[in-house]
Length: 217
Image (cartoon, rainbow, N blue to C red):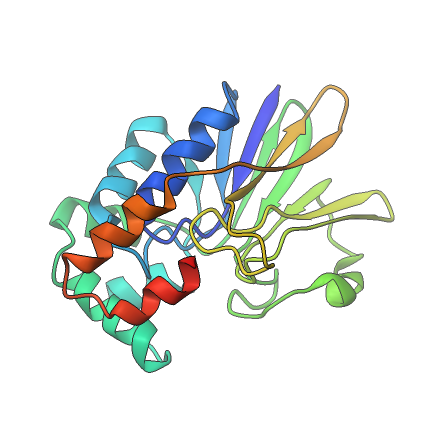
């Protein structure tokens, strides 16, 4: 089976649609948290997730929207407030229903999906700190949060951050995603282009802070 793996879409619909088109057909689509935050399409992104049956977990921005409690820098906080004021009730319910982490089996392979770290969903895990998860029982640990793609195999466990769809932070503005093949157990780390100007123009006609455009240029 082909497992599509994404993370940190952050309400960037043009980026999400481009990734979905680029990855072609997958049997399962996994998302490692932060469906919303930063960009202007929270309702449409959630509705697309629901249509596709995406297996997602809750990221820190998702939790901030449903709880109304958060400590973010001013720009990110203003986006959370904007999102809270515009999200449809059914989409609030969707976010409320997301678990903090998930363990699932696909084709006999055990996957654990977290946003930050297995012991702390808000912890940032980078390449040089992945060794602390050598005791993970699953075959594949999927995480996000940093917006940096990372892939390693440690003591038989694949540790995989697909990078961010909505806001990459590794000096490559193209959305990042991964494909895991359960038959070959191969991982493909992928990038694709998207109509970034469409997102920029959508921001300009909202009351979102124009500073978030800086992350797209």
